[in-house]
Length: 231
Image (cartoon, rainbow, N blue to C red; front, side, top):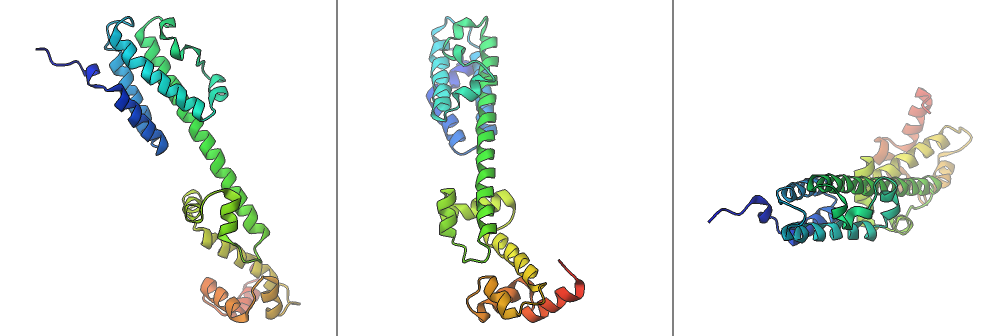
C-alpha cells in the first residue's frame, strides 16, 4: 500500500484544538506556524471538489470565524480584509488563492488581537500609575488597585512588573520617596511635618521607610539633599 500523503496526517479537530490553545495562551507565533502548515497541506488536495478538501477546510474556516466573533473583532478585521469569502471558498480561482487568503486573514486576526491586548495593557498601567500618583501620601491598597484594574492582586503585581520592568511595590516606594524629597527641600517644614504631610502615622515607620530606601536616617538624608542641591 502507498504511504498516506502528508495532508492526511492532519486531524482538523486536533489542529483546531491546538490553535485554540495557542490563542488562549497568547502563543501567537505558534498559532501562525500551525495555520501555515495546515494550509500547506490543503494545497496537496487535487481539487476543491474533493471531499477531503471540504472536510478539512470548513472546520478550520468555522473555527477562525468563531474566534473572530467571540472577540468582537468582526468590524476591525472587515476594515482590513473581507470575511465574506471565508465560508465561500469556491469563489476563489484556486486552492492556492484560498490558502493565501486564510494565511492573510489569520495574520491580520492575530495582529488585531495583539493590538487590542497592548492597548488594554497600556490603559491598565496608566490607570495604576495615575491612582498611585494621586494617592502617594496615603496607604495605597493593592486591593483598591485590583478593583480599579479588575485584576486580582497577585496577577496585577506580576502584570505590572512584566509591563514596566519594575515591581509594583518598588514603583510606589520610589515615587513616594520623590514626593518626600520635595517636602524635605522646604526648609520651613520640620521632619515631623514632612512625616505627617507624607502620610506616615508614626515616626518609627517614617524612619524605617527612609532608611530602607536610602540607607540613611531622615535627618542624614535631608542633609545630603541640601548639600547636593538635589531636586
